[in-house]
Image 1 (tube, rainbow, N blue to C red):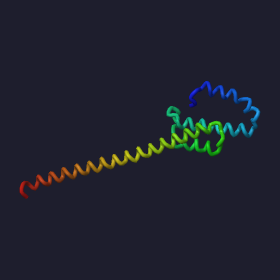
Image 2 (image 1 turned 90 degrees about the vertical axis):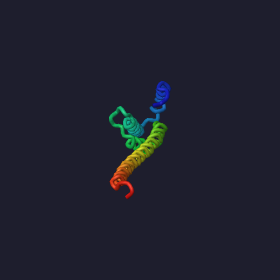
Image 3 (image 1 turned 90 degrees about the horizontal axis):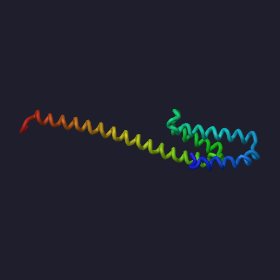
Image 4 (image 1 turned 45 degrees about the vertical axis):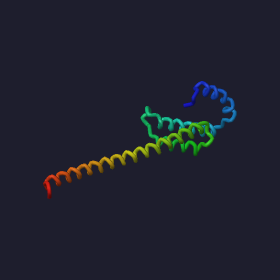
Length: 129
């Protein structure tokens, strides 16, 4: 979301005459499709929407930038795309570390079991054997 809602609204109001003068049915349809992609991306990053999927959101913002490179959402879409890429990289790293920890815990358990077995074997043999 932009920092200042009122300044954003003011810029939109000021831009209305320019948009109306440059408006064509094709331009309006493209703008609507770009806005739809942007809003879909926002839904996909919103944890309260029920549609949260960061990979899909990154793909949506990438598609927006690819299909509508000069849309009014370009800067925000680029920011979301970069943020989501970083987040996904960190999630992948966290998943790999978690798997490594799990393997190390399993190795540690096997080592403890083997150590206990060796201790018991040594006790069973008795002193001096």
